[in-house]
Amino acid sequence: MGVAVRIALVGDFDEAVIAHRAIPPALDLSAKQLGVNVAPEWVHTATIDLPAASRLVDFAGVWCVPATPYASMDGALAAIRRARECVQPYLGTCGGFQHAVLEYARNVLGQHAADHAETAPDAAMPVISRLSCSLVEKTGRVFFLEGTRLGDIYGAAQAEEGYHCNYGINSEYERLFLATDGLRICARDEAGEVRAMELAGHPFFFGTLYQPERSSLRDVAHPLITAFLAAAARAQRSA
Image (cartoon, rainbow, N blue to C red):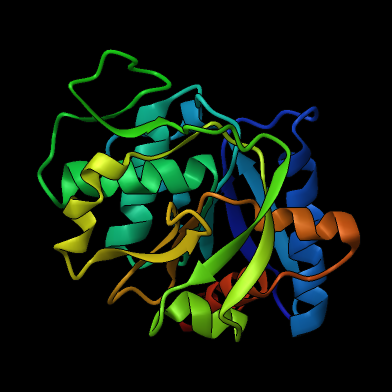
């Protein structure tokens, strides 16, 4: 199968977190489907050097994982920025989705006051805010917007996905992403709430509020994770 594809799992590993336990087997299932080896490595947010996140230079892909607040928000944001600017394949799930939105708002859209209500409850600009209805241990249908790469990856118009989160993109600030050709909304739920984003012009950069890694709990390879690993394998071969 050749050299293992190195994946940085950016987050603060906790055995008690279901998503953390689900991610390595999710990658293994996709690796078997692709016929490659995969080597995931946990990278604690507090160990990421600022501002360059050069620790991640030798990884083929970056997955910013659930369970927030992170020990170092700055470390997580630096990792996401590096993946975005250095065109490393990136997948952000749950907290990784939230912080990808925050990183883009601050560093691309120039909204330096943008913040996360979980860690800054009195923020003047809570781009990420508490959900009106908790999605802890919930499942729901997501609908892919027409013409999005995420919809192409699924090969379907909708999917059923699992969640474990209390925070998401604040609807008051959706306009920031409707007016850009960069990070854009690519999936919503039945109520019209944003559930996924993708970055135009990047080889692979997706964030989902839901947790596709939970498919491994059913011993099923997830199409988004398989696409992420395939993109990382291509990036590693071309490096």
